[in-house]
Image (cartoon, rainbow, N blue to C red):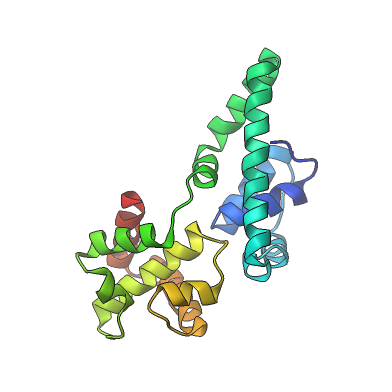
Length: 196
């Protein structure tokens, strides 16, 4: 996949990379252009999957997968230099390519959180507000937002027990805060990610 400018690369990365710092680093590495975190957030907001209808988000995902398949085919059929360039891009961006290729279902994410916490899916989706259950829900909401940017807040709310979308927004923001403050919660998220 080739990008003609830093903005097109940033837009692509906004869909598949969770951290604005990672996006800025990819853009800097590929184009030798320094892009501020504020500019990346602006691009993220402009390309936020919440504002793209589900069919358009799926079409965009299919387009990305089609471009990857064409690039791979060209590498196999084309020159050795093109193949080397593509291999180098995949090597540099292995994490990004893996996340683009592997699409997790919301059920996969909930199952991973359940395994990491030894809870059932009914516990995670339930209405009980105990702290350990709330932490599991926050981890599930956070991972869904990171791994499934095509899901809207409302869709995530339905998957997580039919809650209101504002509850899911709160859960994701709270999870982001806890990742920096609570080592036990960060370990839970890492363990669930490893189980995906």
